[in-house]
Length: 143
Image (cartoon, rainbow, N blue to C red; front, side, top):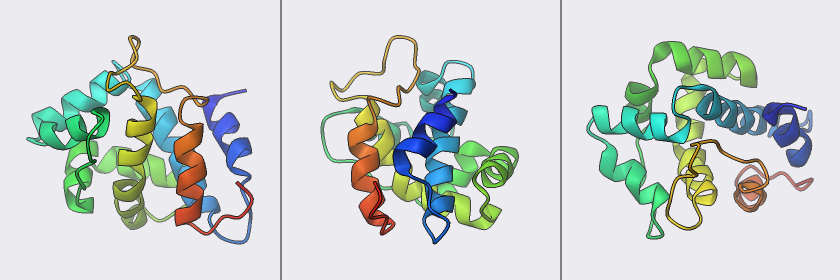
C-alpha cells in the first residue's frame, strides 16, 4: 500500500466534501517523499526562495509561521501545483491556499523532536496526530 493509499484510508475519504483536501494532504506527503532529499529537499527549496525561516519554524518546537498561498506557489512551482491538483482532484488555484493551511501542521507533526528524520521521509504513522487535528479544519467527522 502506498503512502497515498495509507493516508487516504486513515482520513476516510468521503464523497460529501473534504475529500479534495484529504487527497491533497496525501498527495503533498507523497510529493515530499518522492522528491530528491525528501523533507530536506523541500526545506532547501524554501531556503532558495528566501523562506527558510518559515519552514524552519515548522520543524522547530516553537510556533509555526504562516505562509501565504502565493509564497508557497513560488516555492513549489506551477508544475508541482498542477500535479498536486490533478492527484487531489481539486482546481490548481485551490492547491496553494489549502496547502498553506495544511503543510505547516504536517511538517510540524513529522518532526516532533524538532529534527528532520534522517532519510527525510515523512512517515504516515508519525503524522497521524496532525491529520486527526486537520480533519477538524475541514469538518470531516469520519477521521
